[in-house]
Length: 273
Length: 337
Image 1 (cartoon, chains in turn orange, red):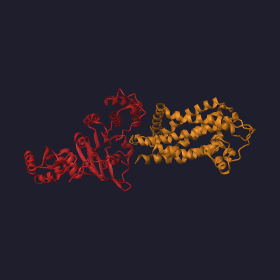
Image 2 (cartoon, rainbow over the protein chains, first blue to last red):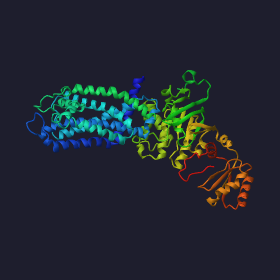
Image 3 (cartoon, rainbow over the protein chains, first blue to last red):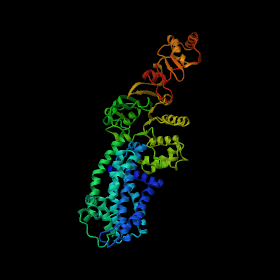
Image 4 (cartoon, rainbow over the protein chains, first blue to last red):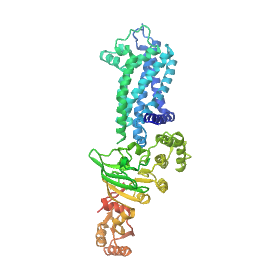
């Protein structure tokens, strides 16, 4: 087998290992599902009754739930991506990376395998989240093709964030430190966005941050592709939200271009200590 | 995969040296983990790398198995350079470390099967090999259980099995029995001796003198990142001279006086161990020396609890080479004089 083919096969071997782990340690999956379900219930039934949407004549919890679900998807995907980072830190800690490094496998395989398995994790998560959404009254009103595109974009964006998280995980080396560090980044990123509140409702500087935040654009794209834009909503004024698919793709590609090589290098460096 | 042509790594046809390290140096900040390490291991032999914690044993293994790049010096394994030919080298060696590098959540079979695939043995061969090894290491019954439920000894055996998946010509075992209970240690020793009787070249690191004595053909004593003595166990013991007279006294206050009383009889430096209340003196003349020692102590009025004569151990070798005991002492500090 040639080099790239071999690297892919190695990546698949590692992905299988991580998939078995998802099956054997369902706590991780459960953990990444329970908190988003709580968020859905919290926002749908507690905060939702008091958040006004531009375009809607009055506060309407049922309408808010249509708005909310795409935001919850985006947040869940990014939380899911953190599993990649804590997983890498965990592997470094247990010494299994030493075993991998002593084998004649492609250096990228451990990362390719890990991020691939985490996509599967995210697919399972988004499936459960969709069921939760349907249960609280959320509906997809667009075509099947658009819906598939919406899910695809969410998963792609999560995959790109996974590489960033893998880099951070290899940098900090301990799962506990990683979890603390990632929360400091993830909370502002997923809350100062149009995920739970329309960005128009935010004060000046926060609004600008939210409008250029890729979490907002992936949320906006999902809303459009699922047909969840509330009728009567004024069109967005910021360019990223006017072109959410393109803006999200640009961010994703940028993340990959920067963090794939950086992470592979960090992996080799982190393991060689 | 064994390269024997000179072009790949400096090994010429007929060269029986499987591992050759020259002047290996590696620093972590201001700490010199390796400080010009030279080592040669002949094909089909077992080399024991013996030294205390922090002597550089693990660093040496990590360099020789391509996990670390040395700051200076060079090394070849089976004629392949550990830096330039790293990837090719990895397919010819097996490594088992101090911390069992197995996946907790995978079963024993899944662990070995994965390693086989990553050695590029292919799916079928990987499966076959995994079952063979599980049987050989007495893990067949546990094969379908996640490793999380394995005992320490079982994990080590599985890790060692992982190192053997690709039937390597050269094997590196870094402290294979550290942290194991005595029974598991004996089991591990049996497995390793059986392994090397098949002709595998083995580099074994250990801080247990007994382990080196029992498993290794030759022993390299390593301290502060360099080899300070090398030879067979008998050769090393011969360097510290003949027998030892060992006297245990009743009262710790008598230790200095016992030492003074024995000094005229000793052929070399005496050592005292406070916590065992023992004075050890290298002597010539066998049983007669023991009688002389007892007489001298009796004349001095020192009560003797126990007395004996023994051949030198690797402990004595280490002590005379470094002025320290090889094994970590958790109990009272030992005083060497």
